[in-house]
Length: 397
Image 1 (cartoon, rainbow, N blue to C red):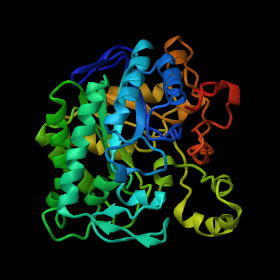
Image 2: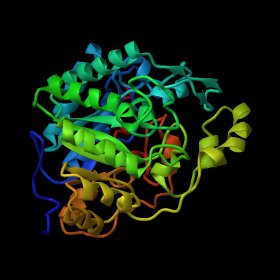
Image 3: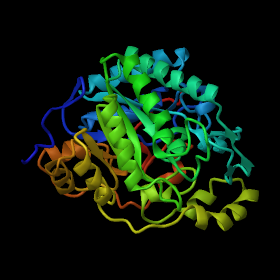
Image 4: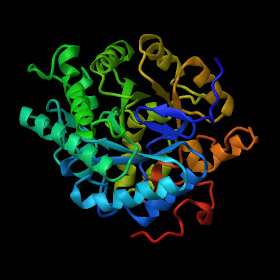
């Protein structure tokens, strides 16, 4: 059956004006762990540009869950700013989602002693992670629930739980990183227990007021990591629990292999330029092992995602290099409920509105990945003039 990409669609208790969602892509527009005017203007441009929902990325559920300096921590002090954010997005006719997570081993990027399922070496920080205790797991599960409740109170329409990219929940799913022999490690059912408990706690916390999504790795992209066969089984368990309204299908690891998510050329020289001069040579020497280039192709996650579509009744969200309206249409016709766009909307914040108006030319994003090195000074497409970048003229408060 042919699906209209621009018709309203239900997502749990929410109704989106269309089936295109802005993916959670770290904005780098907060310095004090709270929403800023610049961040609101950045998302307001995408909302005004026609998406059905925009996703505020990545927000830590507690202080030790930050994956980068200055990230929003969803505590009581963040609620007023989150309410301003949601209201601004609603004024543009779009729904607002917030991505909630705990960085786990990726928190080593902040200089912290990071949590992981087991003690493993974090090459980015040149030190070992700390193995999470059962008390840590319970504390963080409660923090997920509390953060989701705050998001619902602030007026968000959805929460997206980050179960991918080598972050804490993702690392528990990984047979490579999870070497535990307790109730949270070993066989797949025990490795999936943390994810299931988080999703169940969040579902209870929001009490049907807003949609609950989870972003799940289909494959970690590292030897010995989570792969499609086990990931499908995890998805079945989550579906069985009835805790989610949709799954966002992703892959790769910010801890071990980030380019598996992005595909295309790795912007090593541009990334090196963001380091202090004394560290640049060292970065260039190790970067080719950490930032592996993969050929880019349109909808590169689709072959994996089809395995999930065949195995599940749960609504699924497809992402990964979508730059053409015909790709959106084909994905919906195959049975995917929504699509997420990231880099394409960095290049053209009004891409969805352009398509809906009848201009069906491909998006202008060339997937050069040179947006990646900009994430700590305000994520943007380097091909867009500064004065035309969303949020450029807003004060960085």
